[in-house]
Length: 117
Image (tube, rainbow, N blue to C red; front, top):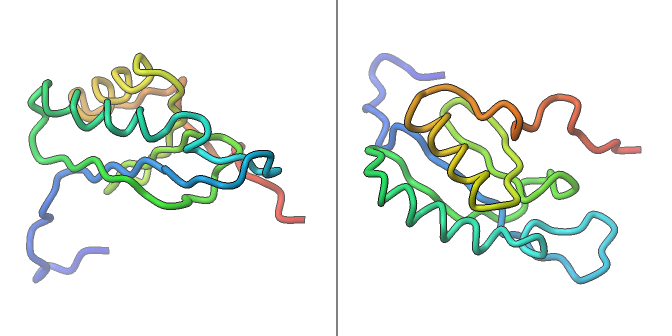
């Protein structure tokens, strides 16, 4: 939670794309094995092409939602997405970061969790 005396945010939105890579055949899989590195590179370039102000797209280590990846989370809202294609990336950029809404069909929700048992 922000305090009134906090400085303004450096970015309006911070996008983290999981690029974690586990060994082939790992039971949880990994986002990098599903193409997240190329999707992150595309997202960075496309956001710049679109001229979206005040955002930063970063590579992240494991975001712990590997089974549903490639996983993306956007802050400050804390909205999670799964993107498999460049079309998915375009939809997230347009709906969430340009229009201020949500790419609902790509959202990970409270139902998309892994049993810890």
